[in-house]
Length: 168
Image (cartoon, rainbow, N blue to C red; front, side, top):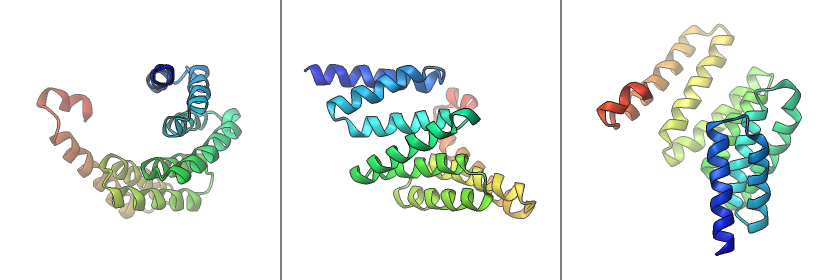
């Protein structure tokens, strides 16, 4: 019962940090709780979120890389393929090289397609479009952006009408 309460406490902390990225201290507590009760999936999810948040700041880049590597280790050990795929997207954001970004995004895309994660497939196509655009490869950028938009439109088509505007 105590572990269950601690899990919910950690999960709520994760959700609150996802809504408000300034709550990194709360996210660190979530990681500590997850470790102490053996909730590896939640720990991995939380570390990925912390890496993604830290990736937006140049001074937190080292923190992002460290959290991402621990998350990859946990995800591989637990077989959490959706989290591995998400980790590659975050790794692409941390890279300064377009080639490294593309390699990470291609790996993520391959996993996402393999397990049918349409939202992650769309996200990968979007970022691949950005890579192509930065290399002035306009036809490839256009193709990736169109693929991303088509998937988002398909996902939005599954939403109730009153929520579609907020999604698109």
